[in-house]
Image (tube, rainbow, N blue to C red; front, side, top):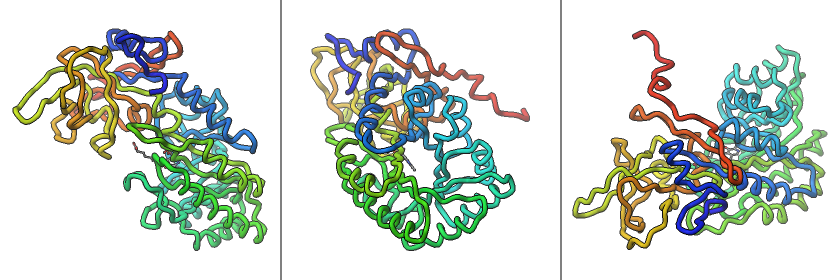
Length: 414
Ligand code: LLP
């Protein structure tokens, strides 16, 4: 997938054999392809080239400093959801005026931090939050620019856990309450309502729900303008899907074709917040087979990576391709690929046909670049994996493997 390909029988990331990375850095190991990220970024840039726009990378997908810096150097801003992400974004060199701040539960301290930094926009998710932003901005005599996150009540047709634009979801403000919030924002001396935002869900394979929601937002922009609001930013959120299995996601070009006429008519700057689309297929989790186990009913391939390293299968029953790092002529067998953690939910694949593997073999779990390491934990006191970034035939370690000492570093009072 993308730049994970076989050359002969060996699986490569760009021009680097994964077996070499496994031997040098050990497993489990996240491996990322810089080329894939650049190509994906370029695809969105090209799609929106004809209108003023800013791609704000949703860094929750993968917040490694080197990856954030690489995207910032390509011209991206970032979409953050916490003070910690703000800290990381600034550390990675993202200019504050390219940072937008989302999230339903921003604390007063996080809001103050973002006002002090001078972020481009706050995406406001409730009337109560607006009050806190207004207070904090006034205390500091600093203007806070805001967008209101609208809940457009459209069905994104994706997994319920990553669906966010329905009225039953906690996100955004319903269209019929939006005007009141803008009026309140205008009345606050240090708040400037300049944008409108939405994000209806993640891993959207079809773009039509986004298009429908953009139309609803465009109507709201017209209404706001009639009331004298100067709305300059239209933020369509993230959500573009990728191919995990056999999906054929409509990409940014299709989306652009359908929304750019509206964006042009409105004369706004287009903002978007892609996460998965940029980094999902750029990453693989490399893992080594520890044991085989046959219990009469099933064959288990027990690997050294686990749900703490990549939780998507456990959490969403997500499908990730698993490829042997060395291709063989071994016959296929149907197996469960599982990790060492003491939970039945600790699996990477159920009933999956795989060429026969044995202890010591390397496997690559593909499309693990988004919501992989960023959702990793140390459950079962498992140090989190290392991360390597490949560029052409070179690679560098962008996060060392955690040690046992790292596991206890923050504990006190023994
Ligand atoms: N903007 C906002 C406000 C978001 O909440 C999200 C993702 C994004 C942008 C980026 O969405 P993307 O382009 O990546 O679809 N852990 C889940 C995905 C959770 C997405 C949360 N919000 C997974 O592994 O599938």
